Amino acid sequence: MNSKKKHEPRVAIIILNFNGYEDIHLLKSDNNIGFAGGNNLGLEYALKKDFDLFLLLNNDTVVEKYFLNELINCMEKDASVGICGSKIYYYQNKSKIWSAGGGISKILKRTFQYGENKIDNGHFDLK
Image (cartoon, rainbow, N blue to C red; front, side, top):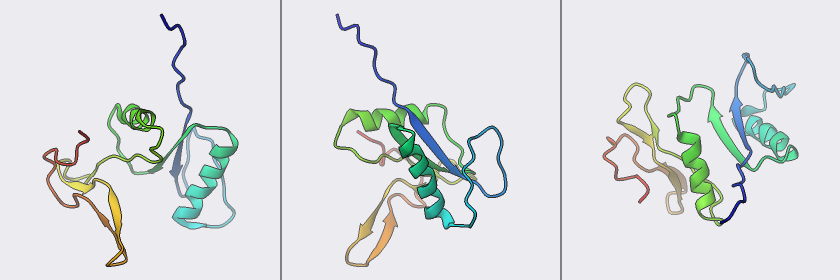
């Protein structure tokens, strides 16, 4: 019988916000450093605090009850996985996918999203 308790990862949830906060640890930048810069500021802080995992969210994100557990399970399933994401739906139409992941077209030299504007029928679910 293995009596070792499973390590619960420490997750830093980084949410960019402009001119509003409540019950959070606030990192303030003297200048507007943009979306990427703001996320980098939060990630630098979280790295110094020895968090195991990092979650970037927009401040208008609505999440499902167990979304964080599912993302943690995805990360812990395979040590070679470096990033996990979830399907993102349109706020006004919860069955219509905004993004189910993305990629970069080397031919077109631009990014693209899987599932964009498609009704979710499970074809982007993990198997």
